[in-house]
Image 1 (tube, one colour):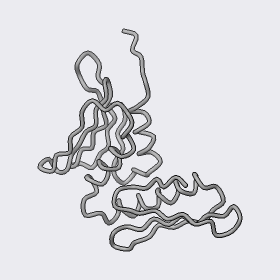
Image 2 (cartoon, rainbow, N blue to C red):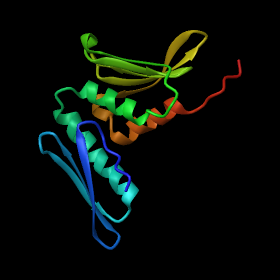
Image 3 (cartoon, rainbow, N blue to C red):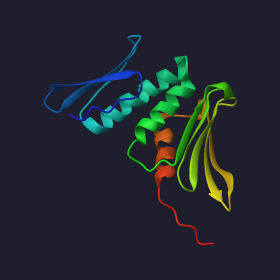
Length: 151
């Protein structure tokens, strides 16, 4: 069974009855995010979403967690450049050819940017309190979408 997880969490998947799955994510401190449902992939995603919310509330290093999660999710994609900067409030970026995802550690904003004629332009910003696993994954997907510019 596919054992997708997130940094700092281990995942356990049990089929507790025919077609019903219990997905449990446990962090290094023993905190759990757990869900029981009948659709395995969706159930895993929802459980990961719960763990993501727990991490957002209690993480000692939320910015590094987000960076590690983004790098893990994008591991097979064409990343041009990436950097985590602990000295700049834990700010980071992951860059592709004409797009990058930036986390402003000072203001706790996740920013999707595009590059046009050498300059980076913000196209979407999500504040930390509005950030959920689902819109985080959506931003990663937008980062990796192929775009063509007709200039």
